[in-house]
Image (cartoon, rainbow, N blue to C red; front, side, top):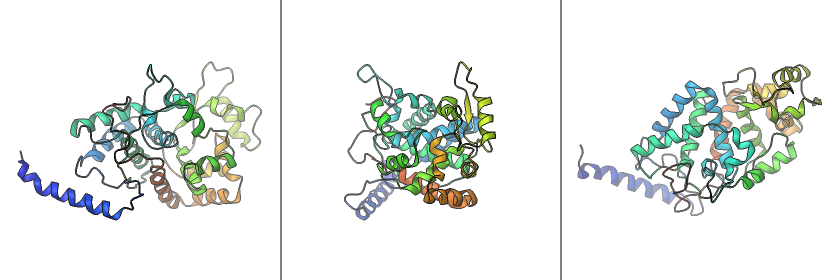
Length: 325
């Protein structure tokens, strides 16, 4: 075992590195940085990646769920892990209780990753950063999309279903509504179209798009609508699941944009991307150039990860992701 004296050079190196990074940042900058935990918890990203890869290899839906979890977290109060908080007696209506969030997946994976990280580095790594790492790792596993995610987020202490209702874009939004929703988070129209590509993985309850089937939405491909009606019988006592991309359902790829062009997508919020020249041109570009979309998807995920972050002494680092300290 190394002595404290043996660790002094490493500690000094970490301190000087932190000072150098801080000196380069503007005072108004949200102090996120790639390798934020390099000194305090150097193996954190490896630990999270191992947990995520194990879960996604077993069930690809977990990867889609983790990407969606990141989006739902960042769009409500910013990327602060507020989506993970369980309801309590004093706060019975957290974001988890908002009906569209009932179908979120990946909570158990985040719990497992947090427990593994706490074992190595107790009280250091935020749940918000673990969500960001897990989404990035899912994109790598499902689509071989690589990007470095800055970290240094802190966990929030507030979570309400009412704010989820106000902040999350529903599947029936048109393009004007989507633009306004994304703009309120500092995200551009390009970001909107690029991040929509995450709908190439995962599935949806029939209830989320059944209004497009009866009567049939004229913007939906008739054969696709017929397929969905077979998969979503109106007599069903429950709401079955349907893959968002029936061509490559477990691969994060540009097939989504081909589906949009073919009018074979589930949601109004997907099909509406063809309703303006700007967004339709991006759809066509991504449908024909997967490499361009992959690069822009990674960049858009990094940008999303800056929305409303808590840093420095704001918020906290939770011991358990489901409850505030």
